[in-house]
Length: 338
Image (cartoon, rainbow, N blue to C red; front, top):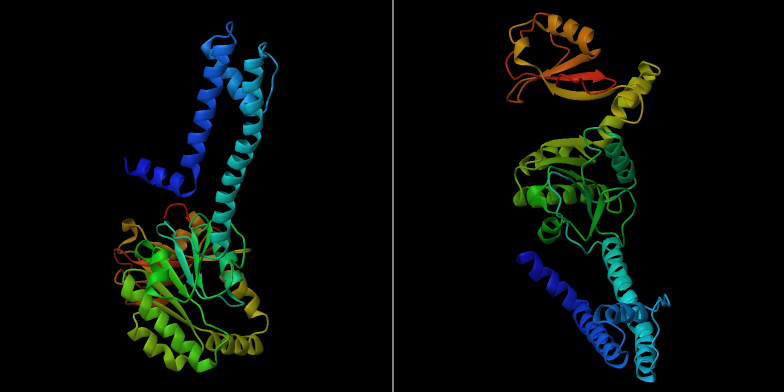
């Protein structure tokens, strides 16, 4: 009932109701007039002739023989051209308006468990491409909330909300049912203002949905504490990683090629986080390492405790695996058993 009421309101708003009334009147007028003047024409055939004439199809299987019927046909033909054109224009107008609103970020999103990207910079398109190439995220909706004039890219299941990261715009992006939020820096601002805006956006996101997983991009590592207080779940400091990678490249030539392959979903092996099965409980790390390499051809590089508080990279060989431990593995695809 609610759907029918919404449909009626939509049709009324777009002018369809008046158009349908006119069409029904013309059909009734034509069928009744044809039946009256054409004595040999049954009511069903009169209705068929009216519809064919009104839509200007003109099969020619039925033709009026009286002048009264011909006048009815002339009226239907003239009105048919106008009504058909108006109907087509109205339908086209609805789709054009919808497309325009999508391009300008004016339509609310109804997705669930989706990614929300707050802000748009030169790194954003690469992030979208990486998400689309990630098998764990390919089917998820991506919603962009950014103060830019129009939708920046066209890709499958990608939506745009125009404006700053405000409570109103986050609600349009359905933040209440969002899965992960990525907060990007505004490169138009100076360094200090970029981080300040990122922290403010984090506060806005967390105030609307504390359960959403928030990944925040920062410029200066000195602002990490502010971001933690804003309840960010994961913080990426761009210049810090750049410096470390440059140092590694200088000392261990070519190592960044390996790192790039692991981080990118587009080629080579990838990183996956999996929950170890209960059958591995009590086994040593080296046993689990060997077992997983043999069974799934993946390499464990880190162990995370069930609580998430302890994250050990390359644990010792005698580390005892506990129930609920998660493993970060390098593999060409997600292990099927996990």
